[in-house]
Amino acid sequence: MRYRISENEVKWAQETFGLIEKKISAECDRIGSRMPYIPVDGHYHDMGEEHLTWWTNSFWAGILWQMYHALGDKKYADSAVGLEERLDKALEDYQNLDHDLGFMWCHTSVAHYRLLKDERAKLRGLHAAAILASRFQPAGNYFRAWNTPGESVAIVDCLMNLPLLYWGSEVSGNDSWKRLAMAHADTALKEILRPDGSSNHIIKYDTETGEVAEKPGGQGYGEGSSWTRGLAWAVYGMSLSYRYTGKQEYLDAAKRTAHYFIAGAAVNDYDVVIDFRAPREPVYYDNTAAVCAACGLLELSEHVGEYEKELYVAPALRLLHRITERFCNWNASEDGITTKGSARYHREEDREVPIIYGDYFLVEAVLRLLDKDFLIW
Ligand code: GLY
Image 1: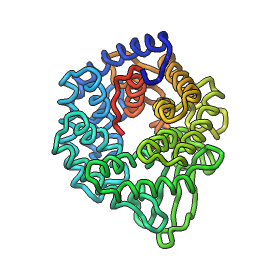
Image 2: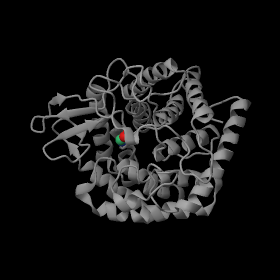
Image 3: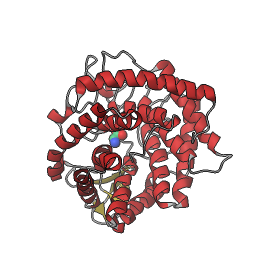
């Protein structure tokens, strides 16, 4: 086992995976190839019908591929392939796609290609990588996040899209995609992440000169705050950039952001709030940040020395235990496992609700602990 956890922890992970399997199997029978986001009255609607280019539309496929990899049950692969095929229309909708091509096609086509060597899936993944590469802004050296006319921003979340380009470079031999990904990661080191280990969410650029114009708070509490999911993206994203490039600065940044995340989580006994630099009251949780950070910490632990691993594995376990003790819905007739996830600080409708990416990271984390995951990023 690569995390060398105790027998008790292995037993706990096995039991948790037993609960996950029952729930996801029932959801798979209900949901099939639909695209879940946030359940309403205990049930997902199909985001693919409403907004096919929405950034979260592939996390369900990611869950299905992880389940297929762990269990070998073809029903998971069939539903994931159905979802991937539905996304072909999104791939044609060039002007409505944003930088989240990594989230959308790593969890579908890249996973499909990695597990089953499907050639059509490989082409879809490369096509998505080419579109992401086309968003690179040479004035400023970053990938443009969204499509608001007259505005150009880089956001911390994009660190999780870079693996699409690292993968694309490996399978196509097109090294320039890897270089663009590293240029964006270098800009994140300079402008997005702060020296103290916390992170900005958004950097607004002057589109002509590429100079930084503003650093607004984005989905966190406000300017200068520390949005926790953004920080989780940084921990995991920088660890992944290190995995693909071996550049020491990325590993150091992953450690710094991990240390800030762990310190912030420890303040509330490892229950994670939406922003580590927001007023203590009201308490708003974001468990999607907790499970994403747990995966990032586990990834990070794989790249450090033997006597350092525990620094990251132990808090990952603490975060996961808190989630399963207090924030999981195991009722198989209702959709969504991880409760109290928050898309953003300042909007009540999507605060403290189950969100599909929370479930993805929970599944990945538990499978990592059992050595039954595969690298989807
Ligand atoms: N990538 C957008 C978010 O984390 O909400």
